[in-house]
Amino acid sequence: MTACVHIAKLCRPKRDWREIIDTINMSTPAWVVCAWPTQLWQVDDASPVQLSHVGTHVLATASEDGPFCGQTLWAKKNGDRPAGLAWDWVEIREGVVAMADPLGVLTNVKFINDEGEAISDREVAIRLQQLVHALPWQSEVQRALRAQND
Image 1 (cartoon, rainbow, N blue to C red):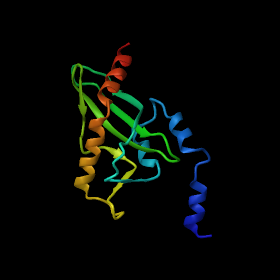
Image 2: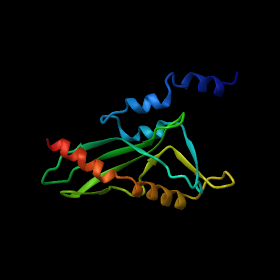
Image 3: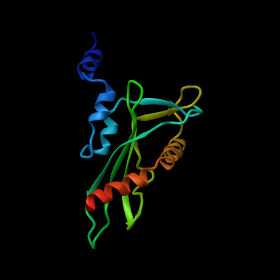
């Protein structure tokens, strides 16, 4: 047995990935998505990606010096392995939130073309923004902000 195979067997989780996603809560850092196994997604796949809200975390409280900010995590829970996106957000003014860094989306997804090759960084950025734009993430952030204020 090679060292790589041996290490891979040692590192294999004992639980199913769906079970792991289900245990993630609001205190789980959004960057956990980077620790998930890489998922290959076909760029030209016509079926829509169904991501679900896993959690939104408010990292800082509003003060006269600065706005609320935080992280949100979304994942595809069906299948045998998770695929997810996470990013930082900031409240621009009361009731208005935006991505803190539109190019700073964290993911374990690797986009590939029809030939199975990785697409360009520019195309990845476009695809990630299309996915984020399609999600109701701002209403989930607003819900987390309301809960923070209660």
